[in-house]
Image 1 (tube, rainbow, N blue to C red):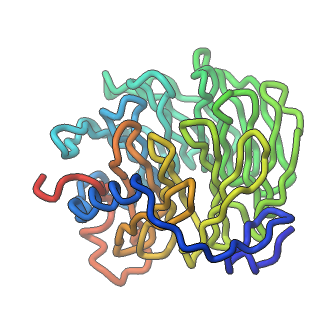
Image 2 (cartoon, rainbow, N blue to C red):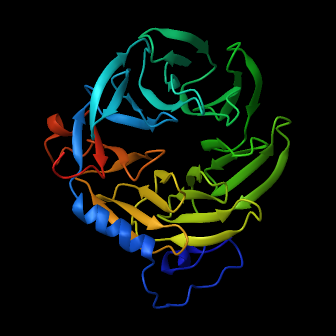
Length: 346
């Protein structure tokens, strides 16, 4: 495993040396995106909940944005003419909605994970819950398989349950002996990834759920993981404040992003796979060009950011901030969803 020297430009994977300081001309893509963001620098806020927002996610078509909150509800907005219009509020959970995600190909369905030991599947064509599935613990993370057939949910006791998305019944359950953080299928739906508290990425075959590999990815807690839409890379964020970029086929670290100073809590790839947004308790969101690691932009925030999501079709970033430190007007900040990339005059 690598040492904390990774903060000085080393990849977190074993065997990587320091990156030589190479002066590079900015790519045409970076220049074009910087020009776009320079013209649209202001983030816009949209009231969503009565308490802080834990999770934001776009539907597969990009028409809707969902948010889940400490106030036990989910909200859904419609993106109309460069603004969010609140469509519905979804009630029913008995505890905080900690994470949510959409069906990978059906833009009407999303699922929420809550500390109330249930997950709920919702259809935006109605405000009613179409399925409630009881689980064995307080749920903290959730993902939907790329083929749409299975929902995986993880709880505070490091149990991951695999639920049939049609019958709403459990298909498998795995108890892990390490702290499970974020979970995700790969894009091909044949492997299942977990980040853990020991700094490792654990990879299981799917649907067999047999261990394939454990990668020593970071010297400290490995928190979040995301796959890029092109299927070329996945990225992980860690308590060491590093984001590492991995080749999906080779399972090797190819690049490291080290501009954040606090544990990396959330990641999102842009629709074209060319940008990676990462956020933490730093009061900015880092946007990097994936292929070079160069800083493309910083989105300024007034507080820690724990959830980010790029729009699936355009350079538009949704995010939500925390309000725990009380050093600013939390009545204004709490429960808002933000968008970066809208025209300034919208």
